[in-house]
Image (cartoon, rainbow, N blue to C red; front, side, top):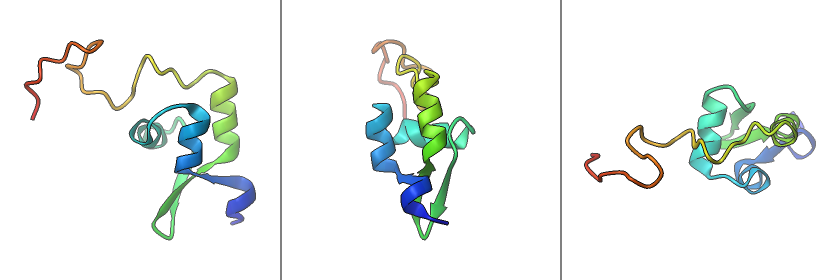
Length: 80
């Protein structure tokens, strides 16, 4: 595997998609982005990032990692 040409770091992917690390990892877990762990470091397939960005698959109004009670900042704070 050639990490420099086909894969990007999670940090770079977060910046490209203007999202958070947690949201990006949830997108990988749900199969919306292609990612893998290499020697303890997560990387994301460059083509899946570019496709997600160009197709508008990254919708910040629907944060994938939000708790169900977090509605537009109205969380009651009773979690955990």
